[in-house]
Each structure stands twice: as structure tokens, then as C-alpha cells.
Length: 503
Picture 1 (spheres, rainbow, N blue to C red):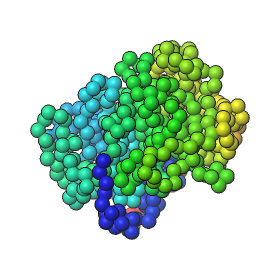
Picture 2 (picture 1 turned 30 degrees about the horizontal axis):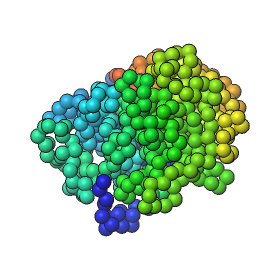
Picture 3 (picture 1 turned 30 degrees about the vertical axis):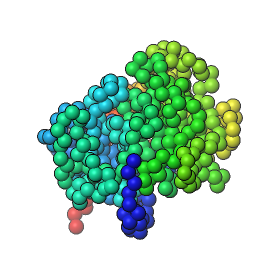
């Protein structure tokens, strides 16, 4: 554990007064706190042409598999990918990569290089790269590496020198047993690092997938703890699923106390959200056991590691199996439910999508609306409505103007009434949908695993505005920031924008 010196932080907080940076930046995945997949951006393109360059601002190369959603802050674009298109000839082979581009031009600025976990492929899936999206606050970048390390990074990378106190970036970026590759100005500068696998005994499964939530001084994130290689056993049942770190130092501040581990269906991949309910702050977390929780937030750093205080809990699928859940692995008719999407908080309600695991569970899923104002076990009382989806879902809902837009692997896009769950329309697409829909500028943007990028009107009446075929599969959520629409496929990062008026 490395702690930044006091002078650095004093200087930083004197000059940094805004949590989210520029007003039109998109410094984390989803809206700040609520996690809603909605942007206030206007003047975004609803069609484009890759051949003629119509509405194409720039295109940058990702690796060959890209699952993280781009984040835009402080004039930079951050995205996790793999190393199949190396930016540094000294780093060849399978690695996790976080790349930083210039927002205006798409110019490559620097990268974080992370060697693979070699325990087994099920710890760090081949070619998956860094799957987590970063969260940027003022002049700091917080993220989770493909090795389950929570890192605090300098947005300038090594271009302005190694800020420290962490100074072992060269060793960190080099696989064990290989000669150390010295760092240069196009490498990441790690300020502090917290290793969840080493410190908490996390048994990461497939990949680390987390989007950090910031509340004041504290970072909230899921741990990616999951099943072992057999998919029928939890190697670390006592490890936490939700943790809290001090953003200034990387010190562990708190963990959940719910003993979720033994009932993790597949992996802990849902990130937390936040809301104010009747004047009370709450942290919302959708667990890998299919239970949604409301926790009191942490308010101070104490000498001991604290336990998050549970305010309420809601069983998303109360009739599903609750014990020995892994004997149902691969059963497409009967299984426990899990939640991979983030819970979205809007006007005192949570909108949550979940059900059978997409790879191993039953072919049932639902979008549910939960009253977030209650206490205790609210399973029987808090459900406002439930809407059956067509099949498994990974998508976080977008709630806008009294409507909820979500997607599943049916494969369908759905529009329902936010107050009642009444369905308005569905739209069939090509290929499963692993990303989340974005609502911006009165439109719904959705990408699919079959390269299809669809733009629809964000209204009760279905209107398909355009359908575009891109170069490769789309797992990342579209993002809007500073008048530009960002769409990441496995292989490319596209910046789409309307032409600026001539002066």
C-alpha cells in the first residue's frame, strides 16, 4: 500500500473544486451517482457514413476485444481494451490495456499495461483485456485493472514525470520472469494501487468488471469475486463483494457484511449506485446472489475496517433456489437469479434488470421497479411493478421522461412506462445486446454483438431513425460528451459529431 504525501493532496484539492470536471464531460459510466444511462447533451448525430466520413470526427484503434465503456473528462478519452494492436513494441502479447486519447483529435497519449494473471484462463480471460471503465474526478483517474487492482492514475501519464509515491510502474507492467521494460512518456503514472486479490483473497472470475462510484472521500466498488474454474464452487466464500476505499490513499475503509460469497451465481459484476431518499443518503448495490441492497454510506475513516450498515434488502427472484445454487449451473429452465447491471435510482425508485445468468442460468429475466424508501426486508412490499424481458440481460436501464429503455439477449430493445411498467414497444435487433442503451438528445442509441448500431426516437411511439453496421461487435455503452457521440466496437473507437457551423 502506498500513500500520497500530504503536500500533493493539499495542492490538488486547492485547485480542484468540481467533482465531475467540465460540465459536459462524461467522467464515469452513467450519470453521476444515479447510474442512469441518460445524457443532457444536445445536437448529436443520428446517422453517419464511414465511407464518406459524414459526421465522423475521428476514429481510433482499440485492440481486438473491447468491453469497457469510454469515459471523457478533462480533454481526454479513456477506454480499456486488449493488446492485440500493440502501441509499444516492448509490450507484445496478451495484456490488459487502458488507453488515453486526446478528446479533440483521437491522438494516442498514453497507456496502462497490465500483464495477465497466469493462474488459469478463468481468472483473466484470454484476450479480454481491461474490462472496467474508469471514473475521473478532477485531476485523478480511478480504475480497476485486469488483475483486480484498484489504481489511482495521473491523467497526464508519465509525460510530466513519475509523481509517486508509487514508482514501480516498470516492474508492474512487465510479466514475471521477463526483463523489466522501462517506462516512458506514453506510459501510465500510477499514484497508488490496492490489490484486491492479494489483500482480500478475491477469487476473480473471467475478468475484473467494475465502475467505481465516488461519494465524497470514498470509492465504492464491486470486487468481481466469483466461481472457480468448475463453475460449481466458490473458492473465496468469505471475501467481500462490495468494498469502500479512501480515494486519497487507497486504504481499505469498509466492506459489506452480508456473506454473499457462497451464493454468488457466477461473478460479482454489478457496480453500485447512489441516491438521496427522504433526505437520507443510500448506497445501492445489486448482488451476484440476486438480492438488491440499500446501505448507509461511510462518513469517516476509522482505524479499523468498517462494515457497511444495511438499511433494506430486496430479493429480486424470491421463488428461485436459495441454497446449493451451483447445482443448477447450465440449467436453462431452473436456476438462481443474478444481476450484472447497475441499479438506476430516479425519484425515489430503483430500476433493476436481472434474472438467469446469461451463460449459465435459466432463460428468464425481468425489469423491476423498487420503492427505495422502506426499511428491512422489503421483498414483499417494495416491488412497484415487474416487466418480463425476452431473455437474459446485461443492460443497465435508461430512465427518461417517464419512460424506461432497456435491452436483452432476446434480442430486443424495450420501452416501458416508468410509473407502471406498461409496455409501449419492443424492437428486434441482430445479435445479443450486451451493452446498455443511452438516451441523449431525444434519441435512444443501442449497439449489438452483430455490429448493428441502432438509433430510435426516445418516445412512446416506436420510430427507428437509423440502423448502421459498424466494423465489429459492440459491448460498450454509447457515450455523449461535449457535443460528440462516442461508440466503441471491439476494434475501433468512433467519435461522431455534427459539423461545426462555419464562422
